[in-house]
Amino acid sequence: MTIAYLVTTTIVALIVAFSALGKIRRDPAIVKVIVETVRVPEKYLMSLAACELAGAAGLLAGILWPPLGIAAAVGLVIYFVGAVISHLRVGDVKGLGPAVFMLFVVSAALVLRLATV
Image (cartoon, rainbow, N blue to C red; front, top):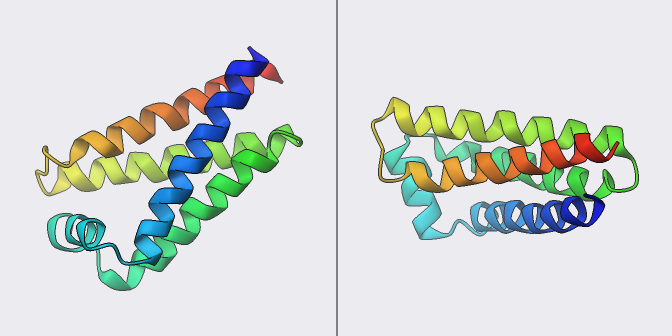
C-alpha cells in the first residue's frame, strides 16, 4: 500500500503543479476554458494556481508529515469539486472530463494517504 501511495501522490502532485504552471503562464487553452467557458474572472487565475501549488507541495510534504498530506489532499478534493460544479453550472459537459479525472485521482491520493497512516 505504501508504494501505491507514494507513486500516486507523486504523480498527482506533478499533474496539479503542471496545471498551476499553465495558469501562471496564461496558457491560451487554459485561459479560454476557465475565463471564457466557465466564466471565472481572469484576475483569479493566480489565486487558483496558488491553491494548486500549495496542494501539490502539501501532498509531497505529507509523505513525511501525514497530517499535512491529508489536509492538502482534502483541500485539493474541495478545489476539484468546485471545478466540477463550475463546469456543470455553465453546462460545460465537454470540459467536465479533466475536472472529474483530477477529482478522482486526488481522491485516490487521499484514500491511500488515509490507508497508510
